[in-house]
Length: 118
View 1 (tube, rainbow, N blue to C red):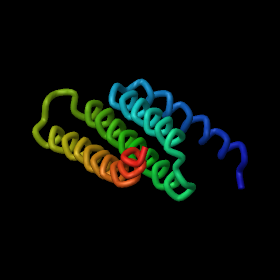
View 2 (tube, rainbow, N blue to C red):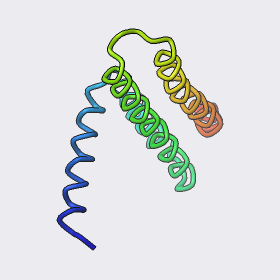
View 3 (cartoon, rainbow, N blue to C red):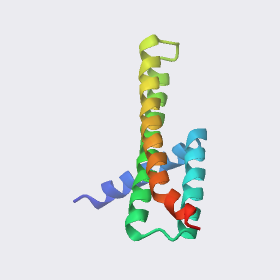
């Protein structure tokens, strides 16, 4: 195992997180994650519910990272408007939309009964 190489990889990943946090959509997703977490503490989520919520947050943020990477690469490869590049960017944005909608549905399943019982 090459420890120095592995540590450099973490440095690059942290730099990627910095780039990701600069994106407007990521800021929205992080705000939503903070709100969901605060509500989760308030309604006292179980360990299993927390696991599901944290997994959903991670999936949405990872999808946003892939989407951002695809958009940046697409813009670099083809700065001028290309129909196919536009479709690629739309598809990657659709992936974020899909996982976000699923996360909201799961959030409703977990949170709604708890909120209604308050």
